[in-house]
Amino acid sequence: MTAISDFDPDAFLVVPARTFEDLRIGEVFRAPSRTLTDAHAAAFQTVSMDNHPLHYDAEWARKQHKYLLRRQRAVRYGDG
Image 1: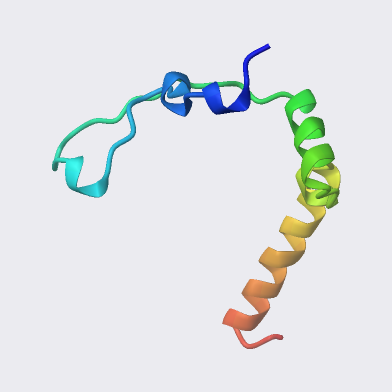
Image 2 (image 1 turned 180 degrees about the vertical axis):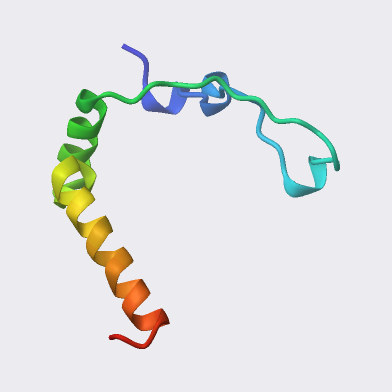
């Protein structure tokens, strides 16, 4: 087993680390994509202890989105 002091985070970079000054106008940044699954969401919920239904309950999120849109319209047009 390798000691933690032997861990080199640079060996695990997907793309090289860069600072703002390293960027140039017109430069294109491409990074590998990843499809997130329900298993990823469940693992994140577990480690972050963030069990808000917004993150995993599509029906709940849909209802809340509709509610927020109605509230925005009401405020915008003076109905709320």
